[in-house]
Image (cartoon, rainbow, N blue to C red):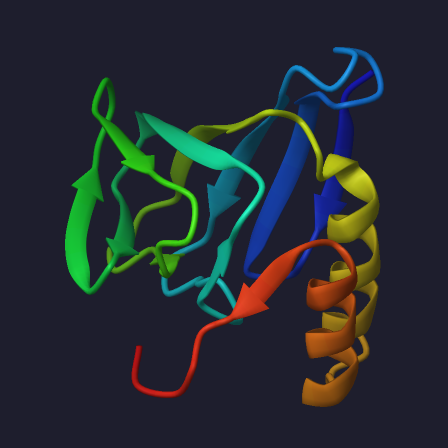
Length: 142
């Protein structure tokens, strides 16, 4: 069932998704290269996100506050809260992300990764993909 989706500066390895959990959850391993980051901070109305650190340190910015998530540490991102992530270290960082309920699936990540890998992603296309899957890009400065 595992599916690796490559964004360049980070990868998403789906371990479970809405299709095989009857909508219970989506679970993936997020591996971020040094200086890698989420392309667009956002929020979502339909699911919560829990992050569990596995290796290195991933920094999640949740509602404007930095949360440095190392091995064994967790963060919780409630619905409707703007968040993003990056790797500020010189080491690879890994964490497990669990979305509850499972409403996203790997389809969103496939589409967004394909747009980013063009080398010149169109912000309007990225926004359309995000909106179609229930992710709302954060207003500038959030």
